[in-house]
Image (cartoon, rainbow, N blue to C red):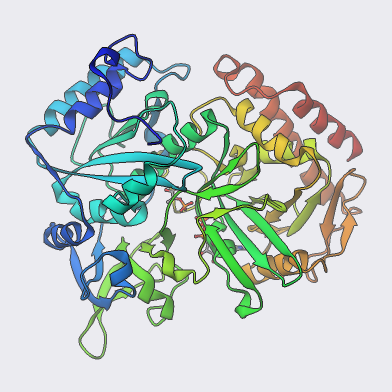
Length: 548
Ligand SMILES: Nc1ncnc2c1ncn2[C@@H]1O[C@H](COP(=O)(O)OP(=O)(O)O)[C@@H](O)[C@H]1O
Ligand SMILES: C=C(OP(=O)(O)O)C(=O)O
């Protein structure tokens, strides 16, 4: 048994650090008489088909038997309304500076009371697919959102009897099970954009007034990642794959903000050139002692933008969100993908999308790729200094995408720094810095930066990015020193010249590096230094700017 669900009566109470008012409020709601437990996917599928507005398409699902679905199961579609992305602005983390725990406790008690007038489903999953790291999670979701409830049980590993037998032998963790209370119909005048409230040290969250499936997925991962971090693992919002080149293997991870290219890179098949094992395209953890990696979810929750309705990959779709439906020439209800209806159409795709899918990799990472969208960076940079590699991760500069619901006036083109591409961290940034710094420390893990945005105004296409990765994997990539900057070199990609004699370019490059330095300096004092980085981060950037 990895995390804790049951307690001896003598261990229940305020002296047990696993108990908090938030945990007790959230967990208690799971046992109400307005809650129906769902223990299998066939029932969840039947419930989802009956939920308001859900479309049962005529698109069959491959591998229904292995997935535990009815043999005739079809792709189900549910659409959310105005908001079709995750609302980062709704997050509040108990324990962080400026968060009034008493105020949010009052809000939560009232929300849970309002919920008692509605009907809910509850179900269990296991997050972490190896005995090395496994956490049990429980979801409570308003019945009108049965399609998202079904998607949740598909996205994470549903806790069947067989799965729980395996889970019983996983490494024990001194932690609570995860409990997610979700009521998309909650409304409060002070929270027009919803509220995603976390008590991360007690593994509970309340997702209120938010319909987007990504809220359920990312809130669960938020808590699972924090649990992993507290127990000897590095939390990764990234994709991880292993290339088998016959005589050697190459393992790589790509870290990027939502919508920046993790799935495109991780799920790329390279025209069948290599045997590729996929660990996952969004979330995994690294064992800090051994370097082994564990996937957290069996399925993929990805954009449908790049899938034409005739794409054979659609047979691995299980559900779709914020995607249209039309009739094909045989009168069959099919998906209208490619963002015709709205941005950020999504689908849950089964693990069978990736023929060589693995849940755990014993080999440590050969390479880390930070995905950025900084238009002063060439398509690919290589960083050979361990501190600089970690500092670039901590100052990962990127752009927002339509995967996020941006509140207020946000310039989509503005560069934002999102350390380690992980806006879900609910512990101090310096701790992640230390975790990633140690990955590079022994020099065995290489570090690259991929710019998947524009370089000097020219789009870096997926073809350029994937072609460059192939060169690196095959040891065919020749790197050129990046001006006078020590330990940084770039891949010379035809059509994307790097010109250090161009004063306008070097001024912009210096400005972007300066932004990174300012970010590091600001963290020293912002929020009482909650996200402060060690002095070496600032020193490294000062040195880099001097070299420039
Ligand atoms: N150079 C590039 N590398 C990867 N993806 C790119 C690139 N340029 C544009 N894209 C597009 O950006 C989107 C990235 O989405 P996705 O891979 O799902 O991101 P994530 O998994 O990080 O959320 C895709 O539609 C992809 O085609
Ligand atoms: C679903 C999300 O992420 P990604 O685009 O990385 O899949 C999200 O952040 O809500």
